Image (cartoon, rainbow, N blue to C red; front, side, top):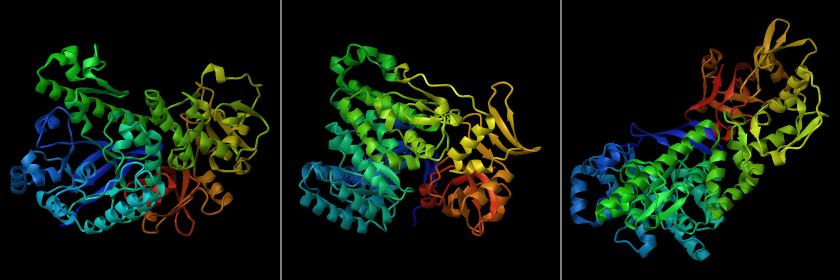
Length: 574
């Protein structure tokens, strides 16, 4: 039986994405958290995970089930879904965690793969070999080679393979593993990172995730294996992780540890509960006085509430385009987390190629890391396109032509007063503003397309430019939210003549051309070429293979995403 697996991006910010994952007709929105359920020691019943937490996916350790005779027979008889009474997606682990902790497991790679097939796992795993951080490199390489060998046995598995990418803290090994695993598997799991989390080595975590992501096709779903603490969700999501799993919510509860988005507290040390989840609202500090079993169960529920709430907060930040602001806030909870955020500077160019060129939310300068944000990197690159003698200092972007001060991000950023310096004022004609925006948005010399007889129409309410006319013909509108130029047919034709192929272009297959010329959106699977200098949310020219203009629209994905994906909208055509 073949496994149906589809994934597409719905919203994006930095390298983070809200996606629609579909496996065998079951849908899951990502980023998603998979609570780990231990049928040997259930703390929160499955019925409560469904009813109280609306969980759509669970993770179960298949090795634990295999080694328990009663469990094994029950699960083989009813299937994993029937046994647990859960109709959503179920992912199973192979026993790699036990292998890392105890050095050996009583099963083989082939046996555990076949067992997961028999019990009906939608997502399963082969028996990869985790390497601890800073392991002896020859040993880490040996373990990685065995992991890659074992992955071959899972290529025809009757489930979606959660393919482990190992390599310890050696980035060359991670790079090799990502390239080899990414060629054969659609769901890739970054393994061996739990110890990094426990030791607060967030800069190493950033290095590993970024290295893996850079070497995987972008249509691969990425699982951060064992990353289950909410304080790191925003950082991992910003680097492009789609799935997380958490046994921490239960394990921490057994140790009477109380999770927050800023770290973990000992319940016994708390005099107030800084939370309003159903558990904390019901019991307050009296949670400490409950009978041990009830205390553990309720503490686990609190930990899971906090984790799921933070993941929703991350998704809303992606939707709003202000994930950087959430990252800056979360990083202040621990010095090593701030160090991890600052490590993103090393990967700024790569991240900026994925990040949208314009966003709904303003740019808030919240610390020195704001100087290296993706918006700053992209803006500084595009500022070189604009020919202007009149520039003002706009930290953290540098010298910005006054003609484009209304354009995102310059027109919608906030910095502390201490960074603001008095600058000379200039009077700028509206036609010069349009020229500057054209160069920033489309490229050097785009201003040459602005004719002397062009007429500017401004909003009566705000006084800002709203339209550009050539005689009575509207050739471009100016979007109020970001002051970007939205070209109409005449200007689009002129842009195509001005800039050689493939500049500003998204090239589509001839089979799709008739539908796009009627105003239909461009789907990624029909794109055959694209200007690599474009960014998501840029205005683009849609052409056929002969470079005939057939549409104008907004690019939804980054160029690399467009070429890697075969599902989802690439350009929204107007």
